Length: 327
Image (cartoon, rainbow, N blue to C red):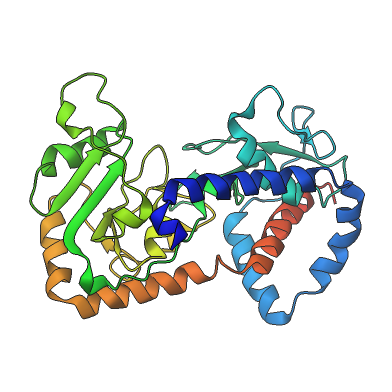
């Protein structure tokens, strides 16, 4: 109830609590975690091991031919970025796992929205989806979780929501702009950009910010990718609304590349030409919409298991250090 009445306050408190907890754990000696690593890995049940290894091999596809260079960071030298706090959330997420390993181990790391495959095995948040296996140097880690991995509760059933699509994004990319060009003002779409139109070509596109509970009053939520993945895809799939988007071009720890169109989300064409048609289809067939929502919830549930998430992150790094010949 408090989250619905004061969403911005709760969001700020959630983020402040996350940072407070991160700084507290940062002060704990790393040796404690290094001693715990063997016991943690050995504690996995067979079913846990199968899930962790399956996901580890998905996130980390690197071969065994790469070796560390002097330009790579050391685990012991991985410290809070005092001069550049832009990626502090990335730092703490990686630090929570990297602290379990020996200080002399080296790794390459690239924070931010990564849309190209690095030239050497590198720990990243995102990578382009490719079919030829050329993404082996993009080693995915669970980064910027405070922004990307938030799963709010949604008590409103699909059938009671508005028969409309909602979108509130920062619109800089041509593909996001195209959606507004085609459907802004359409009676079945409540679209708007939250950043002011600096070119003043379409000042009417600038609309008020809508909180997550406000957006979940709609049956359909646009999950169009930005620089890389659509940040809102995770919380939309955890809700009783339908995620609407073209087939993704990038993926993160959420494994967007394994999502099945019209099973986990509503797929539309890259040119958005069938948007209204697909919306009307699921408005007329609510039982099919609810089946997609059920499948989306099942998909999201695997990321709620904190133990599996932690063990998988550790195994991804362990494979990285082993395949670079360091352990």
